[in-house]
Length: 235
Ligand code: HEM
Image (tube, rainbow, N blue to C red; front, side, top):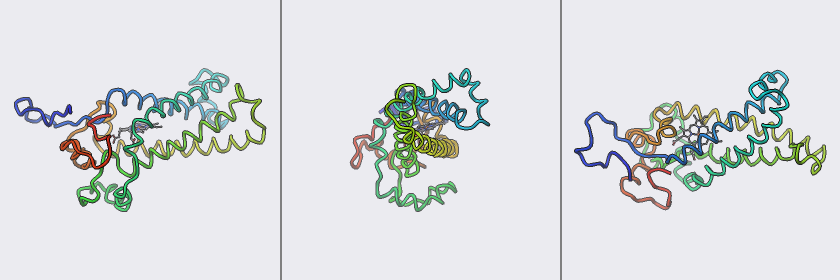
């Protein structure tokens, strides 16, 4: 494992923070393609959603371009999220401790995670992150399938007007919920200090891992995982 905390003492300089690898370059590129496509999708979708937001079409070269590009960005988001899904689904499986963590949400939000017992030590992802993961997975499936129904350029002859009406409604609701989930995700990443660097540099400090994902850190240090093959330092 490429952790600086296990390097021989002569290579550790006093004052250097101990760091732990969390994401490979591949995972980070995959994540940022997903993030960029969701932002562009939200902007182009909102531009088409309400006349008051029509000015946003300027970002995409006008109304016609926005209409053409929006579904294709959706395809990019879908494929890119599929990559994230296959990388991380196993680590997001719900465990008994996650339900306990949920009951302590108040402590977590108040930055009092130290009050936790061994029972609630968190693995690579906490219950909140897992909920974001599964709700995004579901929402993206709903968005792409309802989106195809209203993608007139290629599929208009396969669907009825009635089906399109329902699909527009489902698509809009799913999009609004997805934007809310995205806001929660970004807010949490900023709120828990030291998290953003996981996705920019690929590593976190040992202190961050100990405080927020102690079970994951223990598994890394001992090289043992309860049941998951995914306890590698970075994926
Ligand atoms: C543009 C703003 C975004 C920012 C600043 C951001 C930031 C982050 C950060 C810092 C992490 C690492 C969290 C950790 O390791 O504890 C992360 C993980 C992740 N992000 Fe994002 N993200 C953004 C957008 C998105 C979008 C749009 C999606 C999906 C549609 C997404 C899906 C994920 C997934 C799946 C993970 C791995 C965590 C898990 O599997 O539970 N992110 N993000």
